[in-house]
Structure formats: structure tokens, C-alpha cells
Amino acid sequence: ARRAALSAASGPGATSDGHTVPLLANIGGPGDVAAAVEAGAEGVGLFRTEFLFLDDGTRAPSEEKQTAAYRQVLEAFPQGRVVVRVLDAGADKPLDFLTPADEPNPALGVRGLRSLLDHPDVLRTQLTALARAAEGLPVHLEVMAPMVADRADARAFADACRAAGLHAKFGAMVEIPSAALRARSVLQEVEFLSLGTNDLAQYTFAADRQVGAVSRLQDPWQPALLDLVALAAEAGRAEGKSCGVCGEAASDPLLACVLTGLGVTSLSMGAASIPYVRAALAKYTLAQCERAAAAARATESADEARAAARAVLSGE
Ligand code: PEP
Ligand code: MG
Image (cartoon, rainbow, N blue to C red):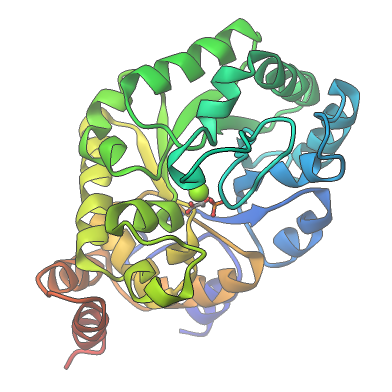
């Protein structure tokens, strides 16, 4: 028991019966790497590259500057996975040189992958910098696009990655309900999915993530959100491809167990949450997580879902 407790305090993420769920870190740049390593992250599940672009809102950083920043992150996880998200500009992350100024609903406008497909030079420079940064390193580089709506988006992104000569896995974030509903189609074009539950909640409930008055609808325990997570995870299983979570949902230890029970294959979160999620997962078997997930989905509200999962996992 002592050894189990110790391995639960560090080591890879796993349920008590040994079902592994890699615990990865969300980072914004090289400055966040030390905390991720310290927390025992098994890699990076979401590198939000927009922070690199915020220094100078008038143009993209040079290929050299990007290459150096990516290289610093990749070197910190020599054998691990590093999932880099290409620039997600727009809505809550506006950039002057990319984001249209006159949109009535920026969250529903040209943001994320949409703005990169409108500015192929910016995407090409970023992908080239990533390819150069990974040269000669044993790291498992994965690159994903934000705000993929459908198979055509996923194909356009994969084409851009191939054209840049990138040797990496290409993936799609699932943050728009259409991508969750048609996750198997999206997976015909890319090798993995990553659920961005912050935006997925926003778009599922038509509830702006920046408007406090609708925060009830941003609760990641909402059963409708859990249903969409389950759909994406099932698609991943059916296609033999991974489907992780990198939104805030993954940082709630109880919800992390439920997400595992829904079939997600990795969890990525702020480094500070990793020890708590690792400890929670280590307490339960995969079958218990699956029962908690089923109980949560059988409810009608976020509060009921939370209570139902807690009841299953505490053996009430
Ligand atoms: C998300 O939407 O859940 C996500 C991980 O991306 P961001 O919070 O950066 O939009
Ligand atoms: Mg998002």
C-alpha cells in the first residue's frame, strides 16, 4: 500500500487497476515548462502558442524567434509527447493583424483555424518553425488546430502540415459541437482529437465564456457536454486513435475520473492540478470510473451529475 501511495504521488497517470491515462500539462511558453516537469507531467497536452504572438500585436514573430521558443519546450520533454496548438487568434484572444475588427460576434467569426486559413503565410511560418525546432530531437511532436468545424477543416490543416514538411502527428481540437457529432469523419483526416471543453461548452450552450451572467451554462459537468465528450471518445476508439481532453474540465479530479470513464485517453491541465488528478485516478478502477460516468450522464443538470458521480465513487 505504501508503494502504491508513493507511485500515486508521482509516476504516470493510471487507475488503481492499471489503466493508463497520461497526465499532460497545459503551457503558454517556455516559462511554464519548469512547473510542468516539477509536477511530473508526462508531456505537454496543450501548448497555447498565441502568447508568443501577443508581444507584438502588429505582426507574427519571425520564424527564428518561433523556432527558438518551440525548441526550448521540445527539449524539456526528450522522450515525451508535446502537443502544440497552432495560433488560436480571435474572440477572447484578438490579434490586430489577424482578427477582423468589424465582426458582430467574434466568437462566431473568423477565429482559430479559420483565420490561419485566411492567412496561409502565418500558418506556413509557424509549421516550418515547428519542423525546424523538432529536427534531431527524439520528442513525439504532435500539432493540432483549434476550432475545427468539420472534415474539410481537418483536411485543410493536414494538407498545410504536409506541405510544410512537418514530421509529426496532426490532430484536431474538438471545441465545436459539429466536430464532436461528426468526430469519425474528422478522424479520416487527422490522427488524434483533443477536446477543448471550454469552447465546447461555450458553443454547445450558446453561452459566452467571457460573460459571467451565463457561467452556469459553462459548467463542464453539464450532461449535454458529457454526451459530446462520449461521442468523440467513442469515435476515437472506433478509429483506433487517441482522444484527449485539454480544457479546464480535466483539472477537476472528480471530473477527470468521469472523463476517463467516458473513454478519453489523456488529460491535460495546468501543472498545479496534476498531483490532485493523479491521486484521484489512482483511487478507482476503470470500471468504477465508467459507472460514475454513466451515472453522471443519466442526470439532468451539472449539480446532479457531480453528485451522482461522487455517490458512485464514494460507494454510497
Ligand atoms: C478550450 O477551449 O477548452 C481550450 C483548451 O482552448 P482555450 O481555452 O485556449 O480556448
Ligand atoms: Mg478553445
